[in-house]
Image 1 (cartoon, rainbow, N blue to C red):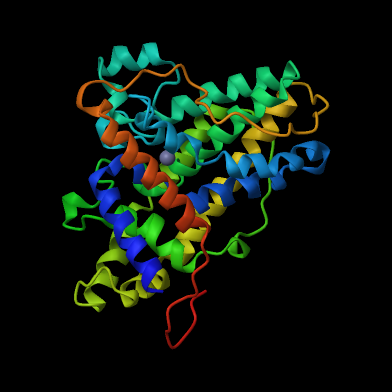
Image 2 (image 1 turned 120 degrees about the vertical axis):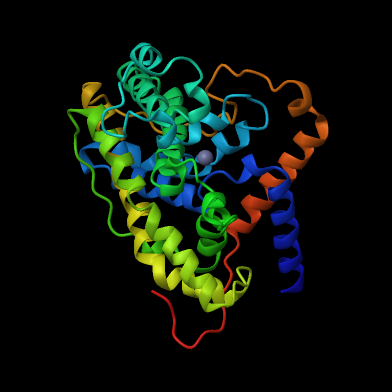
Amino acid sequence: MRYAYTIRRLSLLLLLAVPLAAAGWGGRLHMDINRAAARGVPDEMEGWHRYARFMASHSIMPDLWKGSDLYEGNRHYIDLEGYAPLTATNLPRDQESLRELLGKGHRQRGHAPWVIMDLQEKLTAAMAAGQWVEAARLAAAQGHYMADLHQPLHTTENYDGRDSGQGGVHLRWEVEMPNVYWRIGMMPEVHAEHLTNLWPTLLGWIDQSHSRIPEIFEADDKAARQTQFNVESRAYYFHLWQSSSNLFIEQAHRGACHLASLWYTAWVDAGRPKIDPPPDSLSEASIWKTVPLTGEHASWPFLVAFGVIALLILLLSLRRRPPPPVKSRPL
Ligand SMILES: [Zn+2]
């Protein structure tokens, strides 16, 4: 539809103007991963299944908080190259050791893993105290950061392919491609397990995600070459999905399973408390003590543009578009 196409292009232009707004799986993926994880916890935690709606609807909030919190963006990724000579598997858990090893300024390299661990401790405490509204808000946000780290491009400095002449691959792979091809029915069944050694386990997940970056760049390069570098064409997205759908679905599934495992672990560690029914509504305010944007970042046009973009992302994520006319249907 012409109207939908125009909106898509407009949103893309706005996204390019405010790149931070696009940093995350497409909104629909965040919703689907959080929803699948809430439904995927074991039956002994079945009270949590009823929170699936809130987990989905609030999964996208952390991206929206970027518009009013200077440090929110850093919570969504880790540039592993920036932590060298440390690697994904030997990063220290405590910030003090990290400062001793690398000095100050590591926040700009992204600190999603530490955020996820801090949230795990808060979530366990909230569950133990029977504070289920608080637990729901923490869990939904944790789900967002977990999903982000299972998007391999959220673990590298070359997150948008600029270093390899593939600028824009981030948005193409995590937003544009799934908008056309991804369906919730593609999510395999989610399983959860109780985890005993959280920090190394989390680092292992990140290491695995990071290891798959070359596959995304290869798929993008191949699809671009097959379409004479017309990376906005339907044919490009068809080829991109053909080459990387397995990876895409696998990472979304791993994200949901690992998230369900974190929530189940928090509940078990909290002493398996009785889960209250979900409230009628849940606050959309940030779970963090926010540091306001300052200077040029705080201008009201930025905030207005951000709001428009957020709305467009949400609308486009919810809209189901039929796949383009191709000879064979994708997976
Ligand atoms: Zn994000």
